[in-house]
Length: 117
Image (cartoon, rainbow, N blue to C red):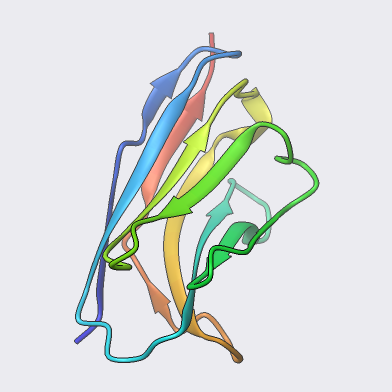
């Protein structure tokens, strides 16, 4: 059974940094794509960044140059380094996983990130 467990969220001032981690277990398929999604109050869920087993990454325009996604070679942990945080980055962040094609069918429980002074 696939399990995704996020950690590292919290309260940070604008301009600050946070690193989110996601421990992944039970994966039976490779290659795969790991990602971070987020959902702010009253807004639709959005893809923040993803990374394939080969290390190829993609980012939402709103976070390019500020966020970095990475994963261990074993594929058991994925990170999201968030720098220069803005109040509009406030959201619940979810670690997600999918096959090379298809939908993100595996989700963690989410971790709250709040950017406020």
